[in-house]
Length: 114
Length: 111
Image 1 (cartoon, rainbow over the protein chains, first blue to last red):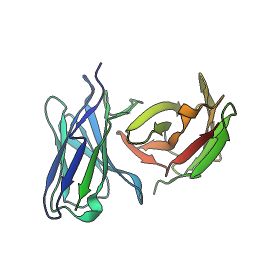
Image 2: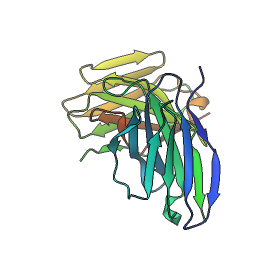
Image 3: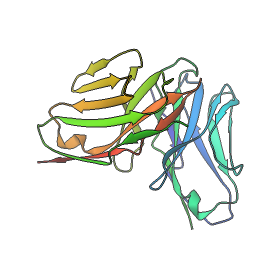
Image 4: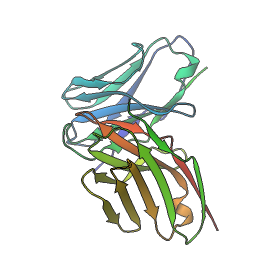
């Protein structure tokens, strides 16, 4: 069974641009969560999608958005990039939301904003 | 709000046991997790424990939970150089897959 796949693995963008990251969950998984990892702030929860609906959201500005498709694949978008958005973005998938115990992470997308 | 704390560094000799400690604040957490992150990689789920358990053992890994003190520990027996990594403690809150992670403990295994 394939794991969680995130694309691209690496990305370099310029301040002010926007970026879209993709996450394909494990087959059959319906919940996808996104996290930002930085040396200063550690791992922080961005949002969670389940059955194409955003169920939970962390404390990030509106420049960060996401969506989930009917096949459970998810994208996150960051608009008007800032230098501080440079980070490793991780997504996690779970079979379903409430009650399920395990979340499996992808390798991440490393975004560098210059 | 929810907060998870860990010591940042731990060094052990190869073959010794490692104990990584974690404290959390959300008493309503139902599951607590340990993840491992190697350089340049994502997070690997090591193990998790349900809040009504005191201990869980899985091969070389032993998780101890003291719910009264909100203290979680991960013991790695016979630590190997391949165990060198950052270990994250996490609690799951709410009704979804939202985790609050600790800052991570960097485990260095010395030969």
